[in-house]
Length: 131
Image (tube, rainbow, N blue to C red; front, top):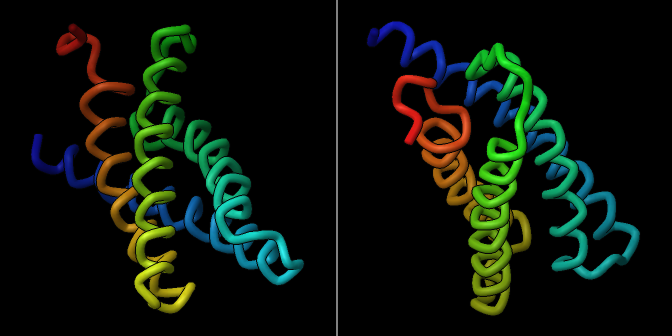
């Protein structure tokens, strides 16, 4: 049981690294092209979310049954919450005078915590714990 939980956490972290690379790549590419950082955040986070759904569903949480509307709704809700937190943190840290890189790193870390908890216990939960 503990082994399975550690494997799940490792897989989530691995997918998270990929999502973060996509997010950061798109974010810093867009900001280099003079897209305002908050708009760049929306696009970059969305790119990471698309990657996240595919890999977390199939590999991290190994959901076997066909995707259903409730799962998609829950996934969107968790990501909207995480996106909102990252957006607000990014804005607040930037207004506080921190570097764009440090602000982005901090906001991303907070979003990852929200995402793991929400995905593990609400979106891709085991069928026997479904409420």
